[in-house]
Amino acid sequence: MSYKKLFWGVILIVIGVLFILKNIGAIYFDWSLILDLWPLLIILWGISIIPVHALIRLGLSVAAVVVTFLLIDTSDFKGRTHGFWWDDDVSNQFDNDWDKEKDNTYEWGDTQQLTATYEGVENAYLDFDAGAGEFSIDGETDEYLAVFNKKGNVGRYYMTTKTKGDGQYIDFKLKEKNIDWNEGNHHSVVTLLNAKPVWEFDFDIGAAEIDFDLSPFKVKYIEIDGGAAEIDVRLGNQYPSTEIDIDAGAADITLSIPEESGARLRASTFLSGKSLHGFQKRGDYYFSENYEDAENKFDISFDAAVSNITIDRY
Image (tube, rainbow, N blue to C red; front, side, top):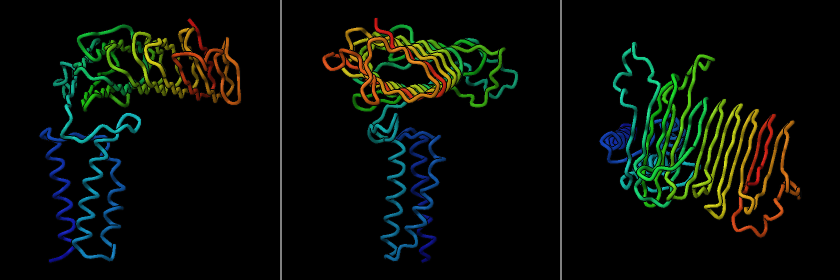
């Protein structure tokens, strides 16, 4: 029997079975990551020319395919791992007019609401990829983990939720990728969150106005990747240590932090202004006067081009 036929036959069978399990909901992985699998072909090619017994090469190849798909499932939200496919509770949600997608006469609705059911988890993770527009977090919800209310004529969002152990993951994205942003378009999303879990956020936002009132929530981590943006984030002292990572283009950023909380800032900017009343510079960092003794601390990393940052104590 030809080894090459056996080799590629078994590999194709393994990949096919994994896709079938995905389609029937037995396992989960993000289809968008499949395009990143091209290095697997190099791995399989390398294994096929190793001078060892054919059965060993075949076993290594099958293992490489399986491990690759497991890594797709377990690597999400800043590289944090959360287990295997078959232990997950996954759901997708679109707007009620999703079946009209193929109707060329369909016009975007002005409103859309997506909700993520709260599973009673201790930790929550939100990956928010929103494009341009106006975005706010403005209140709490007890019934859901998160509620997204979109207004505007730009496009529609989709949402995926996934639960593993004590963590629940929300992936919230704008479906239309190639949008002609012009003066005639208006677009906003108002978000409500549940205050019970500890939150980690990854916000990927373009030219936007951002007004996030996170003061009622236990916030462990925030990443904001924005373009030409006006960013206003208000934080509370609900969690002992919060890490904030901001990477922006031409941005005007205001962080409001409780006066009794300590703050440390590392800023790497070009032609930028800083309004840091009550901060002292030591090395590459700016420290609030009470940083060492404060019960709650904020560690802030700020990388931007032509930008201004203000840390307001309230």
